[in-house]
Image (cartoon, rainbow, N blue to C red; front, side):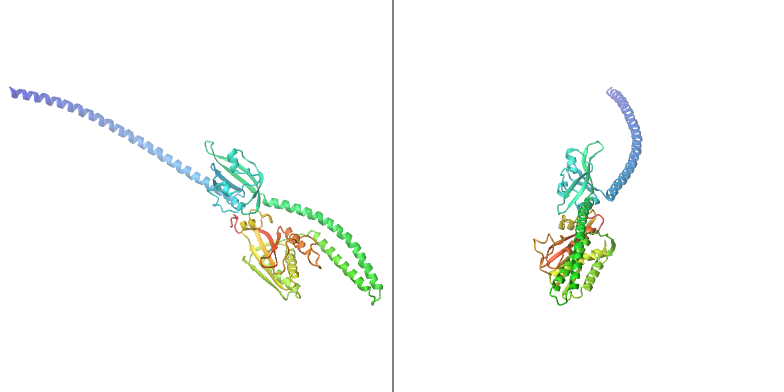
Length: 443
């Protein structure tokens, strides 16, 4: 009895377990089928995502190529244009500084990058015409002229425009400053004003000279008549000789004055400057053989023998002749004349000769220093020696250095004189010339 009951209970249990297992298996199959369908869906979605990603990558590559091309184009544009460009971010840090700006300010292209604008670029006059002011006030500037005194010395004149830089959402992210170098134009304006003044003085001097020349000719003529009618032994003939000599000296002075006031046409040609100076020294020696036995000329130069500049050879040679003659008279035909030729770096030119010579963007100074070992020039006379008729010599007419000054000014240059450190005087002939490289960033 108990055995049969056990068999019956086991049968009922097996049927229940089988029913549960069947249900579980069916549920498992449903889950498996659902997972398979989801897997297939995910595979499809993954395939679509891959296609979209590949398409996005392709577009990104194309955009990157376009951005690189645009960046290269903009960089080439900034490199090529003659206008200076400076860009700053919202903190006033310089982010862009092109080669033209480098040439104008005498700085390397990379030096200002990452530095504060005010630490690198002087504010100038007016002091609110720059990118920093535009960034603060959100007021853009269009072609305003300003003067900048460089930190190392020298002044430049600029025409400045500014603009705010905005991102795609129109937020201000910085400011740009674009400027043109007006220094050479200012130089031309000053030269024009100087030439107009010289022309007016020249007309007046020429008129006076002609008025003086006529009575001088009459005095010389009457003196010759008196001399003709006098006896050879007459002691008064000496007075007549003095009158004639005096009129000759006055006539020579009048002739020199007329030459000084006359406008000389400048016929510039390219010359090898080192060779030109050598030949000038030799010609001066040949023209004064009786005075140069105890005079020594020393020519020194660190420049290339092929240094080429454009000058009027005949007129420029006269500058050297007049300075040489002045030195020889100063040390009484016995001494040393040193001539040193240097092409100065642009920054050195701006520093050393601040205010003496206005340079263009790509210009520096060719300096020719002529020194002697004479007695020198006293401080009260050093600023007067280029004035017409100023002389410290009894026999001089005071026009030699004035003529030299006039000729070099006509060439766009300048003469500066100072005391020799050891003894004597030094005349610096300053001529504008091209810098050694195109961007002008020489130190």
